Length: 572
Image 1: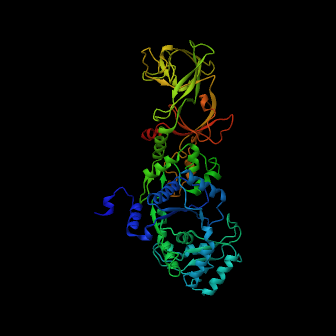
Image 2: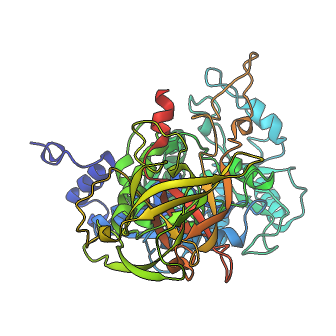
């Protein structure tokens, strides 16, 4: 029986790792890396990659490096570096030693490139980038060789040095690997290794005027760091032959550097409906003002999800449930929402908050009296305990918990109807007042039954409905931000017009993705809640204190509703 048959729960990457460890490959050691480019904030797709790379090392007793692929000074920034480090740690992972940077290896990468030129494996090309692109050919037609492909080695070495020292204009020269212009793999048709960029780098300053491409820097950085399993997303599958070719060339003159030899393994990237998973598109949303920054709670960024109230455990659970596949597929956003509901259901205290308040006056409750009621914090948490909530003559209840002429199966409040106030008493609705000009109900009047106090009820009365409430004299006013999907279409980037041209994904932005309520009434115990504290607002959903909150201003973000309302919408 094969090892795979013995343990069918392994994903295909774990199977590769177990086979390698069992065969003694690389000294039976696993060393992975997470290599983000610091040109934006991390999103859900990166969260999956983080969980996979760090998770593999944890499972098999290995190590994981955090390496920043900082090879493009035009788009990179130190602020992104710090945000990425915060996200990785928040998810619950710690990298091996200090973080690494591709820029740490600029000198070594340059030396390796010089050696490839000397060995006739690379050359400096003066052809324009647009012309190089045209001369690459098509997948069914071979490319054209550059007029500079066979220039003398010494000439390429001299020009490469001038590129490095900043003597040549940006875009005028590139260094290309000399491989095969007729290869069926377009990436092997003399790929560019270096380009001239006269830009300030966030770490190396103005020391460099040439910067390595991803294909050249990545595999060699893996080799320098002794990475054994270089796990990346599926779009890099066609790059793997080039990855291997560079490692093979280096191994011909520096065997120690490629021992252990890194192995690239690809898995399907994460695609989630009703959002976009492209840092370029997310940056557009930020720069063009469609959202309020990278950490906007509508964004699929880790920082946005954190601000919205998602927990590290929920994202790790989501990554585990999505699994590791070999082919791309679309994941329903409702799975992510299920994961956070499952987590918060066990841990978030239940509190009472009235989002759309209407005044309720209990006419037979003594004026000026207030009593403390004990209310359970979380029935799912055996150690959750209870809290004290004040009760008084005047309360706020939800406006939609009252109907002037309720249907038969409406089990909340209406004229002549009775409900239980959560943790308190049963009340009977006697009457209500309306605003004459608008017809809007302004106040509801009810009587209570003193012998129906929760936990002490001796009345024998039965009611079908229970509603939440907040004592009006004790209530704290809060701002609540309700969030919906950022896009109204499940695949906003997958549409074309009648001429076959792609439709701008921003046309599908949901205009109702954010609704702000500024007169929410919450129980007084929330007055001192701190940013990122999470709660369940009874019967409404899960909410998190926003980082905008300050003394005298309490702001909540809606994390997720109690149920998947979109599933109902999709069936209509």
